[in-house]
Image (cartoon, rainbow over all chains, first blue to last red; front, side, top):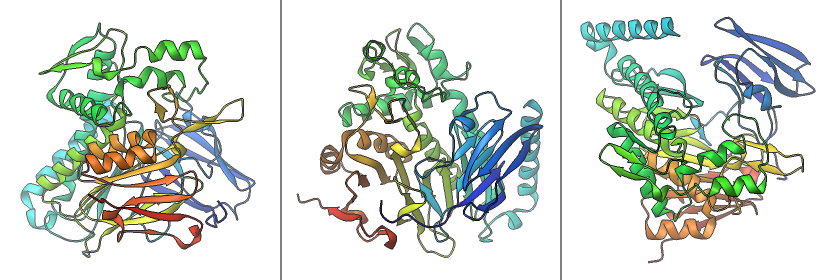
Length: 97
Length: 348
């Protein structure tokens, strides 16, 4: 694609609540720890990318997803009710896919 | 877990009592949305209702989603599908499971085999069910493919019979059916305006509280965000795309989760995402997967011959193809000026 939408705004959603809204193009490298029912996940922001580094969950699918990417769906840790995803454009009520 | 369920039940009880004694405050169009998130069926769902008996509708919907997951999960040892898959090939199932399997078999016929619920062991071999991705070796693949053919499943009343070595998974239409059930529950509770997002399966009731249609994004299969929007009322918008789940093999190739039942390999039909828009989530869900596998020509033929749905196909060569019913409802965002839009018409 020649024309990619600009901006890399992502949300971190824990148990249905948006706990962070981040613009990855402006964020400094750092780690974010999120807890759910006593289990924690560590999300890393690094060079404008975001990924799950550690997760106290049985399957680690969230870690295997790797960096939140242009083509990927959201990073989801189902056992810990945690989602890292791109923020949808303002006028939309929802997005299919 | 147990304590959480008890808490939910207690909450439902409270809501019911509140609904009983103060109908006015719970009832009609306050316009204030109420929503819940449900983690179920390997995804997360957000349900938002704008009117009617909001709390009761949401609590009943959550309970129903969890009940259906309990019937259809492939991994829960107590589910009906698990029991069927791990039986000698015969099992008794509930009415709703029998109906859903029946519907899946109908869709297999309708799509000439492009949707096949018995593909599950092949999907598992690729690692798409647990994230342990690998490229299966040819021998193993053809061995597993030998057991794939859902036409060998027989549903008689509540009895399902299938070959011993066959395993099925209703993942390709279960979420759509669940959306249909939630829609029914909402309507029973006087909800006339609601948005259901079942892990990217969008189903809407009525229009937005201000009377305007819902704006639903069609995701950009190459990048992030949405490439187009479709404005809809009272319908389902369900997309299947290779971008939803995939891995890169050691050979540098991308392998995605939508497999062609013919080959047991990722379907490469020229389509990058297939969106089906129609009245029933079950049909839209199953068809979106099938159209992705079938490719443009066969999808168009199915639309002409069977119909009952609209579709948006995004192709590898930068085209967005939509059926004529959508022509005045879809708009492509300006930054995607290099996408060629085509409308197919029913010439008959």
